[in-house]
Length: 227
Image (cartoon, rainbow, N blue to C red; front, side, top):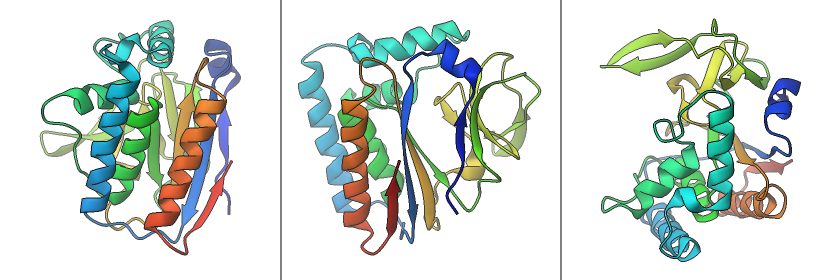
């Protein structure tokens, strides 16, 4: 069954021109990071450096657009950076990008190379459809702090992804909850590539096509749908 994804009118009013590419994949084989997935991350960092040509990530037009949207719903973009900017800063730092697992490495590499926020959710852990909404502030976001599971609540008006069980990602694409994250045991996933003007369109489609190609390469025989 295809996962239902909806974007609320309130979010569309906040960010006219927002678009996302969704890649649904079944029959995946995940596992620890490999030399091949690690090489993709290194290559993505090189591609990013060429794209920025000495500029900081926030000077890129797409990242600047995300900063404007974060400010519009009440977040401080210098403190809570969108996922693409946060990864880009790590890619350019001495320590480089983290190695998580193969599937996360693949989508992180695409995010950095294209400067597009990309997230991946374990479809077997998603309950019902997924919705991008402005929070009331009463929703549950289950996360981990100090090794203990804790429940947080988003700010009223904050943009969040949620399913029937609660918030899956806070501040649009800032922090994913552990409940639906991709683990080494994940076999089905939904990947979301999120774009604002001027990147929405050709760049988003190119990033989605590259991620789908990588998923097929690393998971021969997987069923992959791009929409």
